Image (tube, rainbow, N blue to C red; front, side):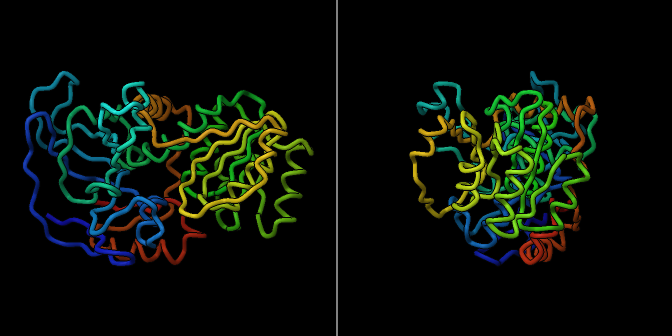
Length: 338
């Protein structure tokens, strides 16, 4: 079979590999679609905090079950599925509390362990989620949607609240869509004009082009009516964008940290006390988030298909990564068809 190998920073190649052998309790899956996410791009650029090389990337995907034994979940050969890519220990303090997305030794496919970007993979049946009639392309978007959705659930966003999302990449758009589904009034900000124009397709009410600190501050003042935002969501992973979310939050507001970065941020921490600001981290997603997301999508409560802006064949995987690297300001979700 073919698989995508990231040998090192900036080095991706499609190689020949042995087809995996299915074990008891596992399913053999034929990949259909896989999404290149911001973490994969960071791995390609060498800026991902957790990556080790060489590595088969990928944790956003859909697949067809080609081999499976009897199982209580009701899966059968031919089912189109997606899966939970976060492997947890099950015995650390977080896992004991049921907070498995916060496992102290969690390993995500494509980052700390081999990813999904192979023509065939095996996974425990317990990790699979029924597609419920969704297309294979839509199912490959469920995991990134869950990242934003989990953060929005953490913030307990209410109808009519003003929400600022900083970062109009895929995760930022997904968080914005999740906030819209709660009835929020959403503003999204980015340095890339093209991404903001694209964001308008999703019904996001306001956009701020972050062309300068002054332009950003003026936009925040305008769309929050001078009060700051009830909820700010950081979806970039840079010190300056994280601090922008602290500064843009209203007194008594909440901030959600979705983005992952490697650089420290310095700020006057007294602003947290002064605003009585609630700062919440959001990591990965939980199984119930996947189930809820699939239900929302299958019931057409929300539509996310338009986040896919670029589609590549498997043989062009190296080009897909390099194009994304060079044009991240104008490309949203990059997807590989297996």
